Each structure stands twice: as structure tokens, then as C-alpha cells.
Length: 456
Image (cartoon, rainbow, N blue to C red; front, side):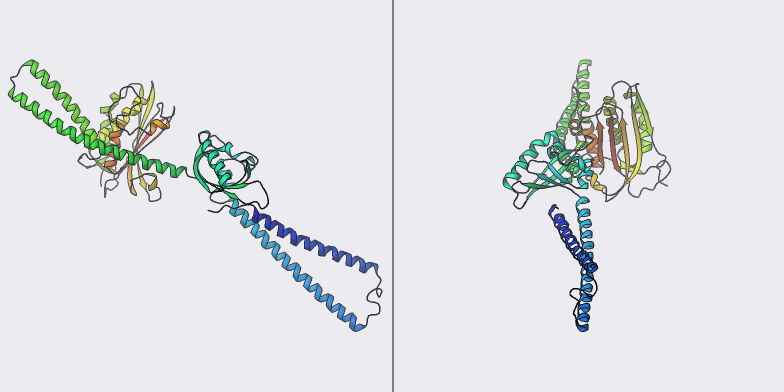
């Protein structure tokens, strides 16, 4: 992309001034000629002694000259209008370009900025002029800017890098900067052009893809561990069955065997969760109305939330069906509700909602792995303490917890189940403003919309 500088506009202004000056000079000459004609009486001066033929020739030459002057004036007027149009086109191209343009001197002071950059920063354009560009760079990224700009001034090589810029309201956004030196004729001071592009959405998609790749690698490892663990459990449970048949029954032996079997059962549940997270677990897919499922399941889970938590629901009468395993969907709902309840200290609120949503080709990029089509959305929103960015990035990792003792796989198992169904899960959270978890589940194929989610 080529930066638009100031020199073309200077040339345009110079051309206009030259033509205007020529026009002024001609006007002065004409005024002087008219004054001379008024002073000199008729028949006096150059016309005295002229024959009729010479007079006619002179008048003809004057008329021709008058026509030439008129044509020149018309041409100058046309050129002036074209220059005005060119100036307007240049101004629109510069000010309303899809990216921000800046002119910065050798000391890093902003000398010029277009309207697009002002809009990106949420400030008036005049607020930038005469101020250092580093003033608008996020504090943690200023070293990157200083090193790159110094190298640009010293080497003259094009510099392209990313950093965060701070808006007028204090918020920041990711920007891609392309910096280049421009020649200033005989001037010793160096000047640079900076092209600024907002890449916040691009960075968000890159982060989502990186997270998906990381979780995929962890899921593959979890799946291998789960299968090996299952093989060991099979031997333990089989041996327990043989002991119960061969060892004489007495109270002490039965207690030992019962204790071992309970532990084996817990390990089997953990293995099931690991396989669900690894997206390798088998499940029995059924067409399920998520609204009916939630209404039937909530009475079994409400007692685990605590008496100080108010549970609200927003469940529409009309909802598309989704295909899933009731036991796995129970795991999803219970894990999300448990995390929401743990985030609430004292009194609080949890809201559960469902809705239909159509994912189009245009917005499918915001959900890596989702195909365009109808989806059923489960949303669980709490009024808890919320999470910072570092915690939010790790919520789907197995056994990750902010407490001293974790609850197990938690949202990691939810992530695996939802991805196995071809869905998507997102988490939005801010400190002291709560958390919202959205689970996207594909609508059942060929499901028709009916009352209470039932097929007609």
C-alpha cells in the first residue's frame, strides 16, 4: 500500500497560484491601457496620421487579440475548475481512506493525520498535530515502537509491525503499522509516513485458532491416557469380580472389595469425561428439545447451587431441536452451572436462556469450526466475580482451577462434548461484572419448528 503524502497537494496549489497570478498580471495591463485611452484624446497619439486602411487593420488585430484573451481566460477557468476537482478527489482519497495515514517527523512528532486515523482513535484530528506518536502507543508496547522507528530512521528500510494503540477513552486496540521514509528534497530532516490498520478482529480470530489447536493437542493426549486408563480399570474390575466369586465372604473382605469398587467406579467416570473431552467418546444421538431438557433437569440441579443464588430462566415456547446424548448434555449443563455458582460469593443470580440463531457465511468466521446453518444457543450468565484475560484463556484446560482444590475436568469436558457435536462454546467475562457462557449446538437435521420444540 502506498502512502499519500503532502507533495501532490502542494503542486496543485502552486499551479493554481501561478495561473491566478498570470490572470492578475493581465488584469493590471488592461487597467493601465484603459486609463491611457481615457487620458489621450481621440485622434491623438499612435492613431494620429494613420490611414483608414491602417486603422481597419489595427482594429482587426485588436479584435483578434480580444478573442484570444477570451479563449485564454476560458481555458484558465477550465484548468482552475479541474484543479479544484483534483484537490477534492485528493482530499477525499486521503481523508476517507480505509486505513489511517500519518506524517511524522524525525523526532516522532505528528505533523499530519487523516480523518480515518482520527476516527480510529476517537479524537479530533487537531488533537494529534504537534504531539509525539508514542503518546498514543500502549505503555507495554512502546519499546517495540521505539526500536522499530529508530531502525527506520537509521536504515531507511520499510518497517511493518504490530502493537496496541490507546484511544481517547482509554481503551486500546491492535494495530498493524507500516512505516516508510520519504524524501524531502534538500531538507536534512527526515520525515516518515505511517499507515495504521485496525487488526483487532484478526487478532481475535488468530487467538481462537491457536486455542483450538492447543486444545486439540491436549485432547489427543487425554484420549490416549483415557484408553490406557480404561485398560487398567478393566483388569481391576475383572479381578474384583473373580475375588467376589473365589474368596470366602466375610464382613472385612466385603468392605475392602466395596471400597476398591467405588474407587474404580469414580475412575471410570473420570475416564468417560476424558474421552468426552478428547471428542473420542461414543454417544447415543437423539433429537432433543433443549427447552424441555432444561425444564426436566433443573429440579435435579437446583439444590447444588445454594440457597443464596436466584435462578432465572428465559425459555421460549418455540425452539429448534438438537441432536445429543442426554447424559452428556446433563454433564454440560451441570458443569457450567457449577462454575457459575462457584463464581458467586454470597448472594447472586444465574440466568439460563435458550434461543435459535442462524449462522451465515458472513459471520461463520467468528466461530472457528462452525458451518453455516441453524443452531440452538444455550446461555448461562452469572453475576459472579468474573475473570481476567489470563484466567479466561485457560478455562477449557483440563484440571485448571483458580481454587486450591479443583473439581476435575469441568469446562474441559464441556468443550470436548460440544466440539464432538459440531458446536462451539464461548466465554465472555469481566472482573466484577460476571461471566456469560454460550453453547452453540447444531439444530437437528430436517427438524421442523413446532410448539415446545416438538416436531410437527
